[in-house]
Length: 296
Length: 180
Image (cartoon, rainbow over all chains, first blue to last red; front, side):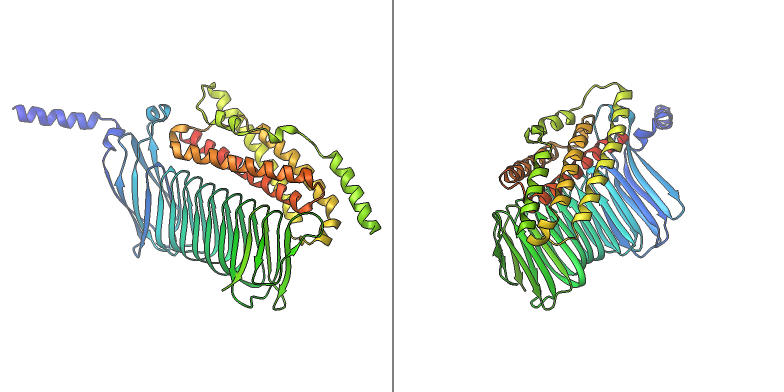
C-alpha cells in the first residue's frame, strides 16, 4: 500500500513539475536533415561541439543546465537548436552551463553562436561555417566554401580548405591553415599566424598584435596588411611576381625583395619594388611595428 | 617645386581647419567601463536608447569605411601622396567627426556582465587600452608631422577599427538584452 502510494505521488510530482525541471537531464535527440540542410545552434553558456557524419540526420547529445530548456525547431531545410534560460534565472543574471554535442550531415551549413562558450567544429564540407562567441575559443576543421569565425577574447583556429575565410578576434590569437582565395583577418591585441595557399584578395588588420603570414599571391591579386604597433612578417615564394609597397613610420623594414629606403620627407622607411614583372599587389603598412618580407 | 609649395600651403591651411577636440586624448575607457556595469534603468529606457545608438553607429561605420575604401586602392607612394593631400585631409576630417559622434551615441550601451567572465571583461578593457595607446601615439605623431598622409590614413584605419570595436560591444549588448 505504501509503495503504491509513493508511486502515485511520484507520478503526480512528475506530471505537475514545470518544464524546466523535466528538462534538467541529459540530452539525446535525433532529427532528420538533408545533407545540404542547415543547422543553427545557440547556446549562451557552455560548449558547442559539432562533428560530421554521412547520415541524413542530426544527433544531439549533451547535458542541459538545471535552469535551462532546449528549443528545437524545424523549418524547410533547416534545423534550429537553442538553449534557453528560464525567466527567473535571466532576471537574476545567472546562467547555467549546457553542453551540446552535435553530429550533423557533412554537407550541412552550420551556424553556431554562444557567449561564454567554446565552439569546436570538425569535418564539415558544407557551403558555409559560421561560429561566433565572446569569451570562448573557436576551433574549426572544415572544407567549406565560406568560413566566418569570430570571438572577442577567445582564440580562433582554422585548419582545412576554404576559398573565403573571415576571422576576427579582439584579444585572442588567430591561427589559420589551408586557406586560399579571399581572406579577411582582424585582431586588436591578439597575434595572427597564417599558413595560406594562393590568395586572390586579403586584408589583415592588427593594432598591437603581430602578423606572421606565409602566403603566395595569384596574378592580379591584392593583399593589404595594416598594423599599428605590432610587427608584420610576410613570407612569400622566391620569385613571386608582385608589386610591393611597404611603409612604416617609426619601425624598420627588412626585405628579401628590393631595398627599403628612408622616406624623403619626415621619418620612416618605405619599400617600392616590382618583382618578376609585377601583377599582384602587396601593401604592408605599420605605424611603429617592424615589417619583414622574406622569401621561402 | 612650386606645385609642392602650393600643396604644402594648402595642406597647412586645411590642417588649421581640422577639429582640435581635446576629448580625443582623454581616457575613454572609464566611460565604457561604466556602461559595462549593470544598471537599474527603467525598462523602456533600456530598450529605446540602444536602438537609437544602433542606427547611429551603423550609419557612422558605413560612412568611415566607405571613405577608406575610396582611398585605399591608391598607391601610398610619396608622389601620389602629395597629390592626394586634400582628399586625405577631407576624409580624416570626416572620419574624426564621425568617430566623435559615434562615441557620443555609444553612451547608452550597457552589457549584461553575468554573460561575461572577469577575464573577458579584462580582455575588453585591455584591448581598449591598446586602442587608446595607439590613438595617443598617432595623434602625437600627427602633431609633429601634420602633413603626413601615411599617418592620416593610419588614423582613419584606427578609427574604423575603434568603431568596429564599439559596434561589437553594441551587438554583444543587444544579444545580451535579447537573451534576458
